[in-house]
Image (tube, rainbow, N blue to C red; front, side, top):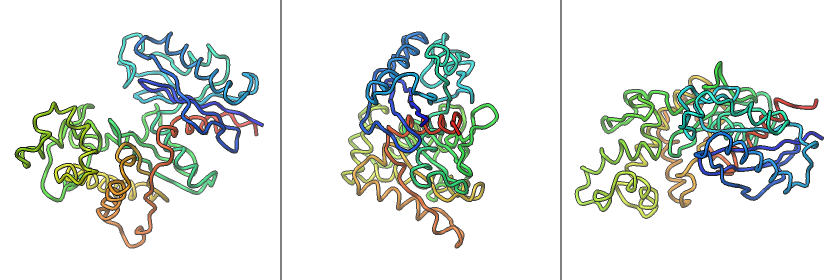
Length: 332
């Protein structure tokens, strides 16, 4: 039986999983610090330790492992080489053009495949819903600090020519996405009015709070730094705060407009929504999803499109990376 280890490398931690072609053998959150700020050598050492943690939990030996699946945030190439100016969690010059995948493979001497973290989470969500069905297509949108995403077409995740496929957060929204006017929005990537500029924690901080706070004089968040205020929006929305709900309503309009674009490009079988707001209290989560569904201008034939919660939260990246390793290094 083929066996695979998945390693989800983030800015603070590495999440670990193991897959045996049929099921995931690590059900709990298994993590250790990533220490990426200490440079590439330390980062690779921590990835080695994470691999060993998977072996310790499963009782496997190194020789039992067919391949390792690695994922990180981008921008990073399809082969796991970091961007020429670094990437989300890899800002130091030592990381510029660093072959992260290759360095781990050379160090650990086990084949390593690589996926962007959004693509990995998308592949896992698709697998949970559709298994190995080769006819199914899905789009995943993960609303976090930024906006991650992924597209799985005919059972395979779209990676693209250089690895930048499905950067869905940086797709420009249509001009009429917000029915109550226009919200000026810029993204940290330099674009204006892309999906991430609205549907993300950063979008709340940079664009939605500056737009809505003047409309709510005396609001308790007005006295806080924007970054701190943005982090409190979810909790206040759970309690029914009007402005916080309006901020999330704006996000649902943006997501609906984007999903309309994806429907007309891919005609998918399902849309998966994940991220912080999906981890909120059930009432807010259902309200958020219902607003998205109601705001999509469906054709009659598309009205039964599945819009579901992306499964298993922070475990999804490592699990998707392991699934991709199984696709790339199958023993069949």
